[in-house]
Length: 320
Ligand code: R5P
Image 1: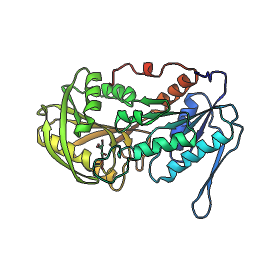
Image 2: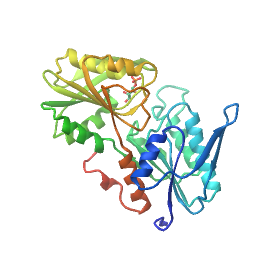
Image 3: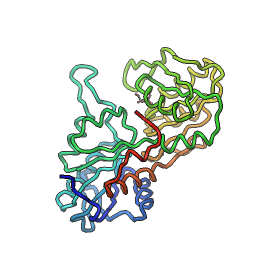
Image 4: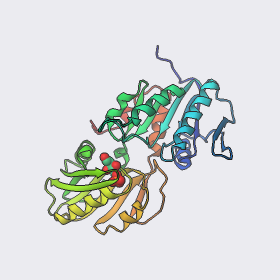
């Protein structure tokens, strides 16, 4: 039976992986973050405790599962503690869902971490999940609980429209990104689509093989769900420039930015600007990298979830 949570109180708490977005989300719902204590024993073992009553509460735990994997464990512990403290409903709000890249058995004897983590969240006691731009949207099917999938494009397309580029083509930096690029192209007024055919000879190494689509003289917007080492993105920018692209702008939802990614991106002369969101705290600031906050979108999703309203109607564009 569908239970109503409208009459229960909303509380929002934050893990330690991205306190800034958690605070912004809470403020956008006109609330403060609820008190939770999170500490480490001297060997690193994590300890969590709700510092206020959560019995009967509609609880939203905000935590991006960015590396280190302690962030994931911390989220699982916050869910477990809430379940044992009799929260009425527990929603894991995961702005960046890490470990999602390993989503299939692409070679023998490997783990499917996206499914493993979905199982762990459910086993810990999560009743639902709100997340954004999963590595592949079909990961939703790995969850046997409701999952609401938000799109950063709801925010970024407006910003791109303000930039006012003409003669635009949207580029997917690999075949897996075509669906996302197509959605952006549609929202930007049926812009052209370009696909960069990338190979991965080994982890974190990208090689551009072919470019499919018209690039000469176009202003290009490259869109990707995440940038890790920056190798895919920079190679894509350079390959498009070589093919005669005019201005090149990047949009990426999750700035994972490991190693020297920021340096690689800001030193890439052909890249004019990169827009990222605040699902992951930015490791280094730079004029070329602009952060768009998606906190209001998460806040709206929380309020609508609490009031049993539609979330899909948050999006005016068809992302399918
Ligand atoms: C690939 O499927 C993803 O969408 C990203 O393009 C990729 O994971 C980025 O990795 P890196 O920045 O290390 O090349």
